[in-house]
Amino acid sequence: MLKIENRTVRSLWLKSQGLAVSPVGKLDLAQTVIDLGFVQIDTIRNVTRAQHHILWSRNQNYREPMLGKLRAQDRAVFEHYTHDASLIPMKFLPMWQRQFARKKQEVGSWNYSKKMIGPRGREAIKARIAKEGPLSTHAFETKIEGKKKMWSRPPHKIALDYMWYAGELATSHRENFKKFYDLAENVFPQKLLAINHKDQDQIDWLCGAALDRLSFGSLGEIQRFWGATTALEVKQWAQRAVDKLIPIQIQGHDKTWSQVYAPANIEQRLNELRPPTSRLRILNPFDPAIRDRTRTQRLFGFEYRIEIFVPESKRKWGYYVYPLLEGNRFVGRIELKADRKKGELYVINFWSEGNVKWAAARWRKLDGELERLCRFIGGDTIVWKCDIKRS
Image (cartoon, rainbow, N blue to C red; front, top):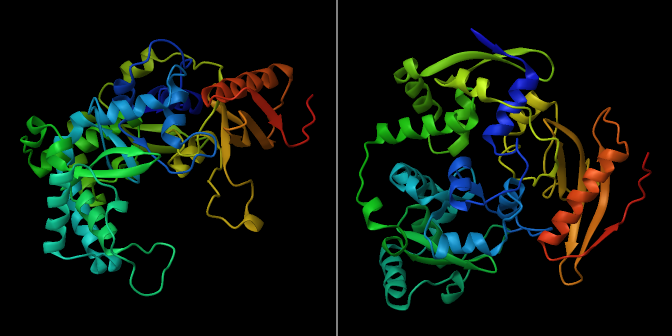
């Protein structure tokens, strides 16, 4: 059985995530999203929203307005739910029909969905959209019934989301991150909607595409990649695809070995592998390279979680802390915040990772990346709010 030592495993993973080369050169934004499989989107704009930071980390010629154009004008991506709200390549739409059906059933079973308006009301919503064009939730006036809680939604908002999950409505565009709903047929190309793959074919594609982007993984990691299959479905796929899967052993950061699967071209990937760039990157907490926290710790020995929902008194690090990746290891973490009106990027706190020594050259790398990130958001000043002694 092929055995891959830890340093090579980390390099292989970073290459598959587009983080093994310097983030420069010609930008093909649509291809970047295809290569990643999807890009998670998030409302929080601590410095820049997650989706923009993720793409900028792969190519620093990226600028924030480009993603809106890719969705609203080019229709090269669509918005739906993987493990979370994400932008997915439009060409994958035929393989996403089962996810529409799965989410429709799932969301319909949630307790709060019982409070949405009924079928006649939902048809009235679609009729308004057909007549008036894309509408946001603010175009409707139903009110929350009963005691208002954190996740309470008015009946029309529940209905809009239900139809969005089901694929009856689609996100046309966003304005200041406010979602506008349109009829699915106005957003999704008819030629893609007309394709009707069997459910098993969709499962086979989803699992194969996940493993291709993972480069190696357990059945659980393959399942979690899209969040569009069950554990049993992935297990049955592995049995069907036994001639296309290569069992291998990978070495973890702690020197232990575990058996996973790799695509059939794993040896070619290893032969083509080169050492990753020594560029230091500030990764977003929602970056796909670190989304699976268990995988991240197993491969890199880097324990990480985002603490935005952790009470301040119980946080180990901080509200919005960014991992620092250099080469094929994590060398620290940094807490940042921006004031775009003032053009300032604030360093709230900084932590070195483990026994990593921060000599002058590494500090220069960090300073350079902070300057590039500051320019990306239109800023010109970096302010250190913490007192850090540099060696």
